[in-house]
Amino acid sequence: MTGRSWRPRASRHIDTALGPMVVALGVDGLAGLWFVDQRHYPAMVGWPGDAADPLFDAVAGQLDEYLRGERRRFELPLDLSRGTAFQQTVWRALLGIPHGASSTYGRIATAIGRPAAARAVGAAVGRNPIGIIVPCHRVFGADDSPTGYAGGLERKLALRRLETAGGAIDGFLNAP
Image (tube, helix red, strand yellow):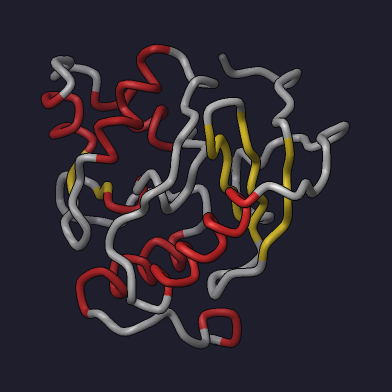
């Protein structure tokens, strides 16, 4: 479940083309991937630091390949157990949005059998603990507007360009 007392079994900072991120490993796999300046960034007090776990290298390597436009799908074990049952359902639905496609909060609400829950879906999407890999950046407003993204709208739009136009994320950190 969610909460301030959760501690991963290990955590590590990594550098990416979109900025520094923190990787957290749970019991069953990758449990967290956050930009260090994003909304809903976890309080990391007391978290165990870097451990010699090959999953860290797999996350960093696959994320780098994705951001260079060389990977379309991640092959990593995920640990989504920290969310409520509803949040976990939404996060699993995000995994079904194909690379290069997008969805809306309303379509996700309908897909999970809760058509009147678009706002609740939006809240769950905003609390997604595994950015990029659980692709909350593929969710847009009903009018295709780039509504919210915990990592910032600039990153959300950069990820959309990466997936729809191809190429790589270059110069994001140096962009005006």
